[in-house]
Length: 135
Image 1 (cartoon, rainbow, N blue to C red):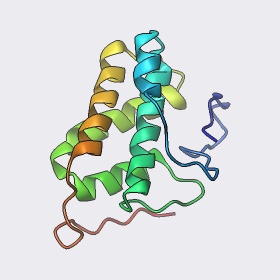
Image 2: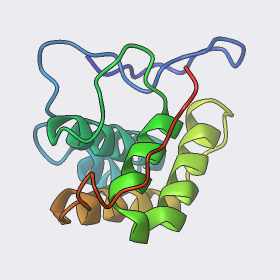
Image 3: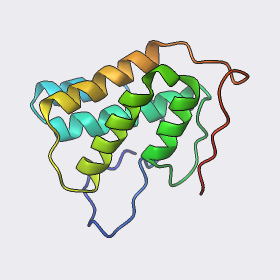
Image 4: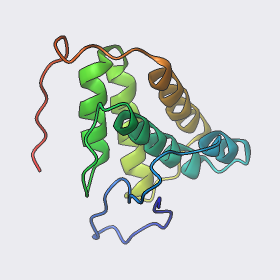
């Protein structure tokens, strides 16, 4: 189950809540974007990115997974997207937790990044740097 409510700012939340169905089916981020719901489009694009990394075995599925852990895993395998990942995760945090509205361009950038990474070949684990994210 994907969390769709906005928590109080003082409440820590994880990026995703999981159930037995991890895959995101259908063009949910693009649909929200087309409807002009840029907040949802950006948030769901980052969640789709996270789900894709998990499904490809590039990120461990753990409770409390954060957008920064998604960024670290993606950076380890897709270094050429490092700047875009940083910008997208920053935008995600601002929208999801900071109450800032997503812009059309930031939502589009998040969707495009998810599409690029989902179709890219990851660097092998031998080539990727080892990243540690404190838990």
